[in-house]
Image 1 (cartoon, rainbow, N blue to C red):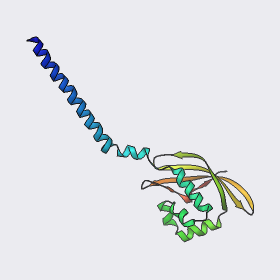
Image 2 (image 1 turned 90 degrees about the vertical axis):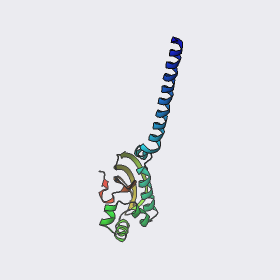
Image 3 (image 1 turned 135 degrees about the horizontal axis):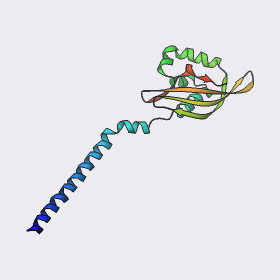
Image 4 (image 1 turned 60 degrees about the horizontal axis):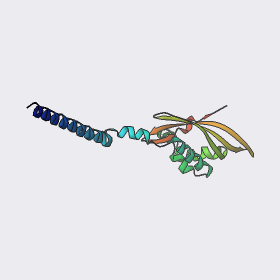
Length: 150
């Protein structure tokens, strides 16, 4: 009789373990499919370096309309596309650039760029810090806050 009791107890315990494992698997699957959406966004966010590269490539190609598209909404409210194009045309001609470093936070980023431009027929190298802000899951350049390093 004791053997039958042990068998019954073992069966109940074995079924409880199976049930617990099944519940844990279901919960893990649900969390992965639904609950971790924000964590996935953090790890798959766009890289701000790419935005800076596209911005300066547009300036080098003199595609000022495309360059304007990389600006943050505050900058677009401050200036029209025509004013931006005039400002850029009066700026030194950019020949090449190199990204030196990136400092990326959750909603803000700062990219240090070595900028080579032509001024009065002489090549000039300047370090600038390009600030970016995350707007609607897209990095945007805060153009009027670009700082020139000394």
